[in-house]
Structure formats: C-alpha cells, structure tokens
Length: 138
Image (cartoon, rainbow, N blue to C red; front, side, top):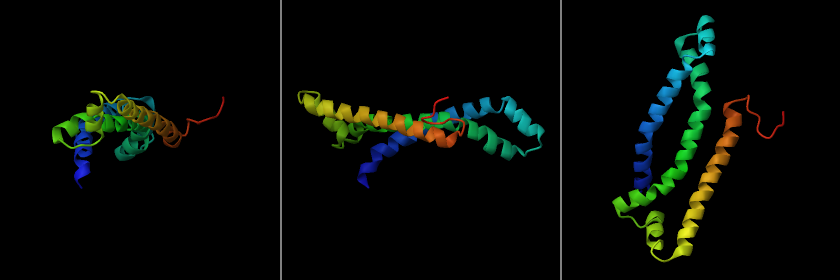
C-alpha cells in the first residue's frame, strides 16, 4: 500500500527512542527494593524481569507510545514533503499560505488526536496498574 510509507518511516524512527527509554526504565526498576525482595524469594531472573520489573514500567511506556501517536500525524508534514505525497501534511503546508480555515481544521484534528491519546492512556492505566482506580475518590 502506498499510503503507509510516511507512517512506517515515522514509526521506525521512533523505535530507537522507545528502546532507549525502555532500557533505562528497566535498569532503574531492577535497582528497586521490590526486585530485591522478589530475588530473595527465589524467583528466576525471567520471572523477576517480566512479572515484576517490566510490569512496573508499563504505565510510563504506555504514556510514551500514546503520546507518539499524535507525533506520527504531525510528523507527516515533513515526511510527506520528503516523499512528495499529497496528503494531510501537504494540505496543511499549502493552506498556510492563505486558506486559513483549512489550516485551523488540520490543527484542530491534531489537537483532538492529542487529547484522545491522553484520554486513552488514562483509561489504559487502570488496566496496566491495578492500584490506579479511574474515577474513584479516596
């Protein structure tokens, strides 16, 4: 499919930062006290990493990935210019020179996508970390 090349380019570029961020979070999580307790219980290294350390870094990773989604769309302005494909990025650039309602509509869509990604990650937090209760008062 021809329409997926800019998105694929943006996702591949993002993987490096996601991997580095994940690595640093895991290294930091492995120094926590609950990891030491899990090792003292006699759990295997695999169980310690996947069931304890990785599970504790899922909320920050979910935030990173969900906030990258609006970046995929807004980054399309640059990648579509490079690939010379007339999509929303090209429409936005052309509308800046005089068709301001179209530019405002594109920016509105970018903002709406950012708000939607924030809302989605807030809902996902309740699934990833059972200690987080969405919509409950203390």
